[in-house]
Amino acid sequence: MSSNLNVNTGSNTTVSPGGLPSRRNTELAMLIFAVLIPVFAYANVGLAKEGELPAGMLGYGLGLGLLAGVGHLVVRRWAPYADPLMLPIATLLNGLGLVLIWRLDQEPSITTPELGGAMAPGQLMWSTLGVALFLGVLIFLKDHRVLQRFTYISMVVALVLLILPIFFPARNGARIWITLPGIGSLQPGEFAKIIIAIFFAGYLMVKRDALALASRRFMGLYLPRGRDLGPILAIWGLSLMILVFETDLGTSLLFFGLFVIMLYVATERTSWVVFGLLLSSAGAVAVASTTSHVEDRVNNWLDPLAHASNDGVTETAQAMFSFGSGGMLGSGLGQGLSRLIGGIAPKSDYILATVGEELGLAGLMAILVLYGLLVERGMRTALAARDPFGKLLAVGLSGAFALQVFVVAGGVTGLIPLTGMTMPFLAQGGSSVIANWALIAILLRISDTARRPAPAPAPSPDAEMTQVVRP
Amino acid sequence: MSELTLTVMRLGFLAVLWLFVIVAVQVIRSDLFGTRVTQRAARRNDARPPRQQQPQQAPQQQSGRRNRGGRGAPTKLVVSEGSLTGTTVALQGQTISLGRAHDSTIVLDDDYASSRHARIYPDRDGQWIVEDLGSTNGTYLDRTRLTTPTPIPPGAPIRIGKTVIELRK
Image (cartoon, rainbow over all chains, first blue to last red; front, side, top):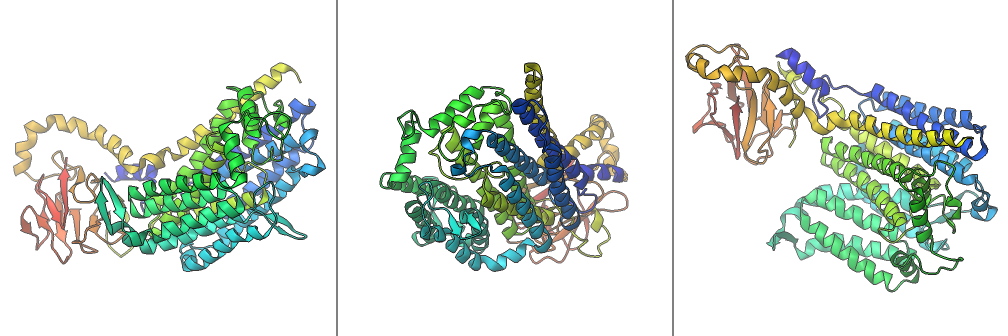
C-alpha cells in the first residue's frame, strides 16, 4: 500500500505535501529546447535571405541562452517550486519575436529611418531589461501577498498611468504613449494592466461577498442590486474615457474585460458577464459612431477592401492577403512578402501577419497554442493557489494576457477592429516586453507559493500521509 | 540555397515548433488530470480481481477480522452530499482529516463544520475508524452522534453539517 502511495504522489501535481517534484530539470530541458528553436529560425532566415548562415547567429544564440540560463538559475534559487513551463514558453516567444523583427529589418523598404530603422538591436536590449525586471521581481518579491497591502495605492498608480498619455501628443492616432525627453517613450498601459490587476484582486477579495450574495433572481440570472453596480459602472466609465480621450480601443477593452473576468471569478455570477458584455458593446458602439479615429478602424474592419489613403487597400486587407499567401504551411521564414504591408507597424501590430505568411496556418496555430498554454498555466496557478488574493491575481494577470492576445490576434485576423496593442513577447515594443516579463515573474511567484509543499502543520503522527484535496 | 533545402527547413521548423508544443502538453498532462485519474487507474488494476471473488467470501469477512487492505476494505472515500459532492479520496492507509482548516485533507466549506472537525483513520487491523475531534456541531454516523472513535460499517453515511461522506469499495 505504501509503495503504491509513493508512485501516485510522484505524478500528483495538485497540492500534496511530500514527494512533489520541483520540476526544475524539466524546465531546464524545455528551456534548452526553447532557445534552440529561435536559433534554428535565425539560421533559416539567414539561409533564405543571404544563402549563408547569418553572422550574428552564434552571438544571438549565446545571448538568448544566457538570458534564459540566468532566468532559470534565479528561478531555481528563489522560486524552486514554480511552474516549469512559463519561463520556457516566454523565452521561446521572445526569441521568435526577436528573429521575426530581425527578419523584417532585412527588408530595406520597411527599415527606413522614418520608420525607426533596424529594430532588432533595440528589442534585444528591451528584452534584456525585461528579463532583468523578471529577475528583480522574483528575487525581491518574496511573497505575492505583500502586493495586497498596496491595493488602493495601485489603484491610484494605475489611474495615473492610464490618464498620463492624454497630456502627450497622439501618435498614429492613439494617445497611448508618454514621451520622456532623452530617454524615449513608453506605453504606460502595459504596466497599468499589471498594477490594476493587483487592485482588482485586492478589492474584489474584500467585496466579493457583497457582490455575490446580495442579488435577486430573475430569468435564471442573479441580478445585482443597484448599489452594487457602482464599481462595474465606474470601471466602465473609465474605460469609455480611455476610448474617447486616448482613442485606443485595445486598452479600453483590456481594462473593462479584465474587470469583468475578475468579477466573474470572484463572485461566480454569470450575470456580471452578461452585464459586462452589454455595457461594453453599448459603449463601443456609442464611441465608434462619434470618434473619428475609432470609426476609421471600424470601417476598415467592416470593409477592408475599401480604398485607403495609401495606394490601394487598407492594412487590414494587406494582413489578410499575407495570411492567404501563407496558406497551410507558409512560404518559409525569410521568403514572405510582408514588406508589402504598408503603414507604420509591420514589426509590431502586424507581426502576426508575418508569422501567418511565413509559417502558414500550422505555424500560426502553434504560436497561438503556445499563448494558450501560457494562459492555461496561469489559470492552473490560480486553481492551485491557496489564498483568495493569489487566486484572483493569477486569474487577473493571465486574463489580461489572454485578452491582449485576443485583441491583437483578433484585430490582425479581422475578427474585431484592429487596435494598437502589441502581441506579448512577439511584437516589437519595449514597454510590452518589459511589462510581460514582469507579469510572468509575478505568476511564477504565485505558482511557487501554490505548488510549494505545505510545511508539516502539526506534530501529528500521520502528517506526512495527508493529501490536500480541493474542490 | 537550393529550393529543396529551404523546403526541408521550412517543414522542419514547423515540425520542431509543434514538437515543442507537444512536449509542453506532455509536461502539463499530469497537472491537468491531477491525482484522481492516475490513482483510479492504479487502483483499478489491483481492485478488479478481488471484486470478482467478493460474493463467495463476503460472509466470512463480515464475521471475521479484516486484514489490512483486505478484500472487503473500502478503497475510497466519497463525498455524497454537500458543497464538495463528488469529491473522492483514495484510501491508502493514511489518516484523513476533515474540517474547515485549510490544511485538512478534505477542506469542508460548510457553515456547521469546525476547523478540525473529525478524522478518519485505519486502526492496526485496517478497519477504518471515524473520530470526532471535539467539534461544535458533532459528527453523526448514521443517526447517532459520535462520542468515541467508532469503526465505520460499509456504506454507512458520516454526516458533518450538510456534508455526507461514505466509504466505498
